[in-house]
Length: 318
Ligand SMILES: [Fe+2]
Image 1 (cartoon, rainbow, N blue to C red):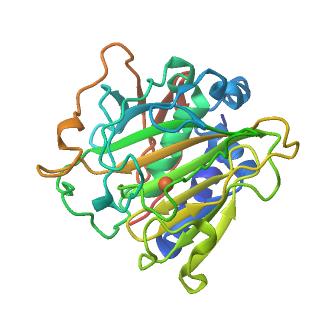
Image 2 (tube, rainbow, N blue to C red):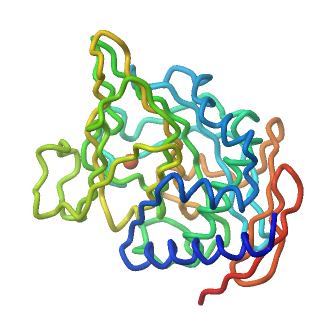
């Protein structure tokens, strides 16, 4: 890795961050993401492997049209590191703008394994997200501990599947928020999916929760985008923009259609009285340990990926 390439890419990340700060969401094309992730340590081999990582998912605990895994990671900026956290049940409540039949239920997902967390493209996605959201002030959520230096990132690897009998809904809950501060969604691939499937709509916070994507108030739609290319990525300030998605439709309706995604939820640890308080451990995972260095935005540093240290560059922001 040449320093110049790394510096160029860090300036590009800085531009993306500026757009995120200004617009409260940013969509980054996959081709641009490939360039950025390579500079952050992703190998060509792992960029190929991550396309297929969703072939090994498990049945979702509550949704019949979805396969899933999840894993929790901590962004620890004091140590310039991200590490795997121990497994905990997952819960989202109506209080957090998530209204669905399983709101408030605790759900236990199959755990993300080394095939994903050991992949340098995945690790570079964590590093990329950390660079974009770090020190971006957002509307605070109730019962989150904004004095805590740690950030909890719950990653979901999801495959939504439409079959002749069942419509795959990337957001069955309609208009909602994810209960976090910063949501990042990255497209890994699809099969037999139409070109107008799975459009993401961003809504003003005044839009009513649980409204279907096609029944929302057009005046409250703030934008829309569609993940179509490998690594197309959207980042949203989750407590300032609600979102909804259209379903996955099949080109050949006799065959299944699939859509594979990585979702990175990031929020501060919660305070007592929050639904996730019993499930918010900051303890490292002992059976599936993983730790990576995070690039520092303000100092010439080193990024340590699975392949070893990568020469750092300099990018500055206030
Ligand atoms: Fe969501």
